[in-house]
Image (cartoon, rainbow, N blue to C red; front, side, top):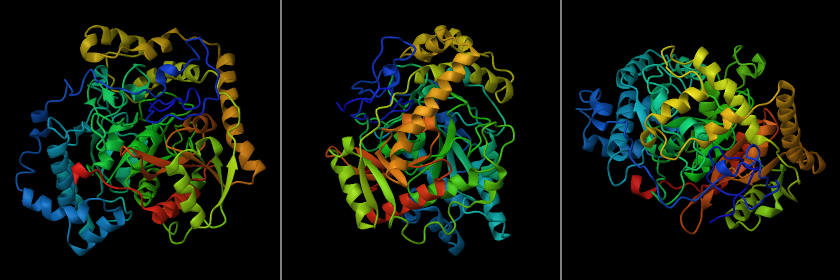
Length: 547
């Protein structure tokens, strides 16, 4: 078992463990976050969903897919598998591919691989029943020169805590099975640019802030998501587990995840993908089931940096109903055009943690960066703690979840609070909460004055910024390099952006990612550095059983 990083990486979606432990353990249940730190699981209590009927899932596609044969699927594989968005659009432009065929290709793969078979991954929780007809409309629009953005016509999956029409937003919870909503703000933006919403991805239930002692990737509605690089052996990471797995298995072009602390970085790195956790406020959070209005953010997940940048670009827009939304002046920035033409690493100064230099993949990645002109500075991690991290999440979710239900949820929902959901689950605990609901109990029990809560938030943000700013300023660094989600907790409370890129595989075949962390609103630089590293190293390999 790899050592656990306590409190530094509160991992709502933890997949990897950091050997560092800079936070003192405490016996107080409100500050001990070991319940939501990474754990190794050797046995799952539940694999298949009790709430998804495969026949019902595919009923609306029987006619649409009746003419899509295995022969056509095999013929399209070289055009689609592992291809980036610009290449797919080139195939559309040349007539080798259509948006309808691309959509059917992904649906075919999901039907073959995702549920109730020896290779099932349980990554997809629901499908858009109208997506094929919507794809046909994109083909017509393309002929009429309506394509204005590269995301146009690209089939995407949304983590199932992101609101969209035509499919319920369950957050993996039985109590939310009938949560039929309007589109979230970022989904509106995606549709404005012509993206296709293929379906919803499974997740760690309630974004992994629910059960405490449960494997990442499990939800009552979606079942247990499994890692395609080591099915039933390797952790999927979470809480955006289905998004990470679906991307890795080529079930979609790209996917939307969400992160509070590690929930994009963890599953992206665990499934050999690219995941960007943006500066909090760069993307709107309205219409997304929350944990923390202080820390939450959606973000793009893809197989490569180019697609990650394109998806980020397609979601950006100022939202005057999200109090953390960034200034409108950033709306016209493109994160993919003219960003990846030349190496961006030459002369850039990156801090590398001495405590991680025993990791051979990390050391190899550093050498790759040096070969491309980067300057590497060894740094000791600052001895800074993150007190009351768990309490921040408790106190935020206690008020943020009812606010979501009132403003963005289905008005017919019977549950209105965390207490209501706990009571609902107790009616059939074996089905709705096989691993318990200890973290929800902690939310209900936690109390604080407004002044105490503000103090908790201020101390955490100050400490998170100090952890990065101290070496950044002292060594005149451009960024800091980590592994997977090892320092996601500090990046979360500092509200700093981070991107993870595949850096190889352990001897057992488990993927790992090199993670770049930068100052607020440095996404363009992070993407450029990540792209240069990706092109110099080319470490990603598709999972062999899903080709």
